[in-house]
Image (cartoon, rainbow over all chains, first blue to last red; front, top):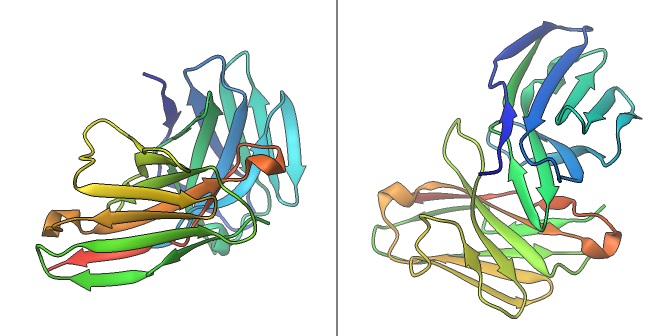
Length: 109
Length: 117
């Protein structure tokens, strides 16, 4: 069974801090990795995709991928209360997208 | 970016009736669409993968005769919940992948909240 694991949280950070979200996956052959944000009662929206080892930055978001360790993370700099949501890690391989259970992030003003 | 729509956004129905939910890719063609269900405070659960022009592939434990999926065109997939019961009340979300865009990124519809009385 291919697994995508996330710490369910809740993760609480003060406004302006860096929020660090982590995800591990079991299938070493996975090639594509995604982070989605889901506000309560809404459907997920794509934040970042990453395909190669290293860091990928987009505004306040940085995705980090380490295929050797089978680990992908999302850093949110200068966290804002509007970042409070559940963050879903997704891993794609062989026409199959698998989601983690999500990490609930709360940014406190 | 790729846009996926769903209709209706919210539906309330009586137990025993059937409900059809539409999922459309608005600005791209989707050979594959996915149907998820999400109960409150739980993660997405993949129900089935819908391929244009062929039968859907259902996840283990999902009744194909209860959740009918039709992917009639490259921009439309429908999910029909037949003989709905209160336990079917959930948030149903579709997604589509834009393979022509060169990635396997899934774009999600806004979801349909179903309440069965």
